[in-house]
Amino acid sequence: MSHRSEVVATPLPGVFVTLTDSARSFPRHWHGNFGLGVVDRGAQRSASGRGAVEAFAGQCLTHNPGEVHDGTPIGDTARRWRMFHIEPAAMARLFGVSSSADLEWHAPVMDDQALRSALDRAFDASTAAGSTRQTADSSDSVLLEEALLLAVGRASPLARSPQAVRPDGENLTIVVERLADDLKQAPTLDELAALVGTSRYTLVRQFGRRHGLPPMAWLLQLRLQRARERIAAGWGLADTAQSCGFSDQSHLTRLFTRQFGYTPGSWRRATAGHSVARASAF
Image (cartoon, rainbow, N blue to C red; front, side, top):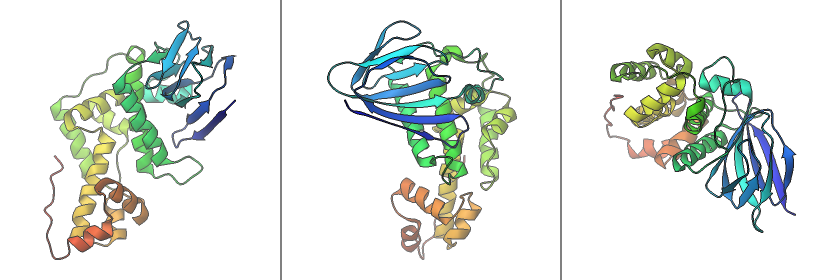
C-alpha cells in the first residue's frame, strides 16, 4: 500500500507544511493545531466534527485543534493533499487576537476556487521562502505570511475577530507612501495596520482590492521596478540589491529573473546607452 508523507517547517513560527500521497486509511485521531489544505488528487471519506464528509480533488480541507477525524480513500487511487498546520499561537497572531480559543473552522470541506487559489499562492510562497533550517530571505517570509493570512481569512469568515475598521482610500495612500518611503527597511504588517487603525487581515484585503496586490507583494514589485531602473542607469548589481532592500545580489537576481523572465545582466546589456524613465509608485 503506497504511502509517502513529509513535513517541513516554514520561516513563520508555529507554521508547518505537510505533503502526503497515500492509499492508507487513517484511524480516528486528532491534532493539537489548526489545519488548512487542499486535495490535489483522488478523494477521501472521513469523520469530522461536523459528521461524515467526502473530499475530492480541488476541494479544501480543515481541522480544528482536538477535533477527532479519520480518513479513508475513495476508490483505488491514492489521494494526494497538502496542508498548512498552524499552531494555536500562530493562528492567533494571524487574526490579530490574544488567543485562538474562540477561533474555529466552520466547514471541514470547502469547494471554493478562490480559497484554492489563495492556498496555491501560499504554498508557492512557502516553497520560495524555504524552511527555518535554511537561509530564508526576510522578504520571502513576509510574502508567505501575507499569502497565508489571505488564505486563512478566506477560509474562516465566521471565525474572524470583531469587524475591523476598513481603511479608506486616503489611508491606503498613506500605506503606499510608507511602503515607498524606504525600500531597504520595510514596515511590518503590524506597523501598517496600526498606521491606518485596522486589523492586518482587513488591511491586506482592502489594499489588494484597491492596488491589485497585498502590501508586501506590492512592495516587492516596487523594489524590482526600482532595481530595473538603477541597473539601466549603470548601477552595479550588488549596490542595486543593497539599495532596493534585497538581502544580496543573488536574492535580487533570483527574484528579478522570476519576475521579468531575463537576468539583471541581460537587462544591463540591453539598456546600455539607453535611458529608462522612473515609474511612479502610485
